[in-house]
Amino acid sequence: MATWTPESAYMLAAIEEALKGAGRTHPNPSVGAVVVKADRIVGRGFHEGPGHPHAEIVALGEAGSLARGADLYVTLEPCCTTGRTGPCTAALLASGISRIAACVRDPNPRVNGAGIRELEASGVLVSVGLMEEEGRRVDPAYHTFHGLGRPHVHMKWAQTLDGRVVLTHGGYITGPKARLKVHEDRFLADAILVSGATVAADDPLLTVRLDGRPKPLLRILLDNRRMLTGGERVFGTCPQGGDVWVVRPAGSPIPEFDGRPGVSVVELATDDGGRFPLRNLLSVLHDRGVMGLFVEAVGRLSASFFGEDLVDRVSVHIAPLLAGTGIGPAAIEGPVRMQGGARVLENPRWEQAGGDWIVTADLEAPCSRG
Image (tube, rainbow, N blue to C red; front, side, top):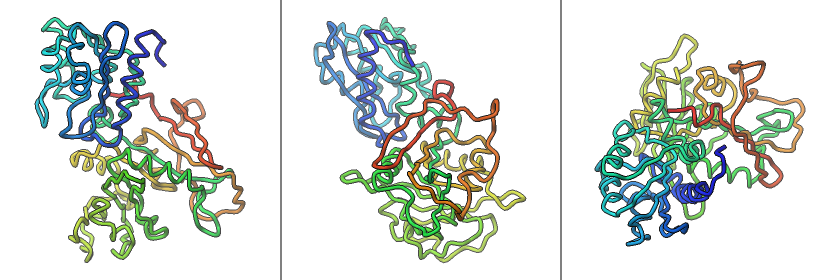
């Protein structure tokens, strides 16, 4: 946690702006900015998504002529590249901003310090590192994608107080408010991944269902046992709910549902145990541009993600139930890499959702990535 200073209040305001765009901006980062003049915020802005003005431009537009000689607080290094919009550095120099404070350098190799150097070369004072850890948490998927060369993996499961992930009589473990949080987390991702066995057993839609906030997701179904028939409900949501990838072992017979609108069969080599090497799959997703991957898994699949050290964040939904003798797998059917007797998680956050509790934590502090 950053040491609190008067400047922290301004950067916190920029972070709050950035979070307004969370889940909408990829492949661009979620960014927020505020312009400060005479100890007063005179301009605010956040990036709404590809093709929309960047946060700095929105904040400068609100500040108008007051931007000259003012300070800018921004959650990420300003860009110096031209894409769907022009470079923010050019607009900042034209505005007369005198000083810029950024949480963190942009890990995108197209920027990665070049924006800072351009601004400093033109006489603008630039400082980086104010509330750095908080700034990285604004859009951890963006930092993981560019820093580690793979999607950011958020693992989720639900369980009873006695650790069961399946109820004998079936049905949901947690209540509607906790399940709404699942949709909020899906909204922040670019893709969702589950096992084919989960789809065959539960027949989920795997969509984002939030009032007024539709978002198609890439749905990835790991069907190494070739269980799926194409009649499951998820296939009926294509392509409006997002594309579906059915990942099957290389050399498998091509199923009849391959080539339906929005449906693709992706072949991937398996290991000696018949499992997909997850690093290879994440490499494919990285090449596709998937920055945030939401994984709903238990048992051997969750163990494989942990075993390959590919989980960045974990959310456990805990219901006040005692299931007693249970059926189905454990939450993790396999060893998790231990440190000093237990795996220590970073930044744990607890929240109550109706009668349930949700704990979310990171497996490695965001400030140590990329």
